[in-house]
Image (cartoon, rainbow, N blue to C red; front, side, top):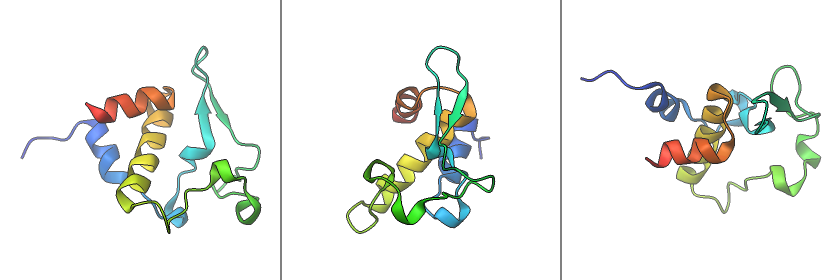
Amino acid sequence: MAKKTPEEELVALGTTDCAECTGACCKRVDLVTREIHKCQHLAEDNSCNIYEDRPIACRLDERWTPPQMLKAHCTACQLSEWKQIPIGEAVALLDR
């Protein structure tokens, strides 16, 4: 069996379980400096300090979102953080 690329490993690691979350979707990479900026509500343990009252933009409703889409979202966020690239670039890498 061929060794997996780092991107393939991330796809395997993508999680939709918030209890196992790395907080990747609460971090964004600056397009110019490539610095990672964290949400002001992201706690040290990668949990959300305002989870119950978080804005709509922070919600992926599991009742209406297919599991594959939730996994793809989490994987793209993890890849963005890991490679320090914007989320759009991460999605493009995963779409190859």
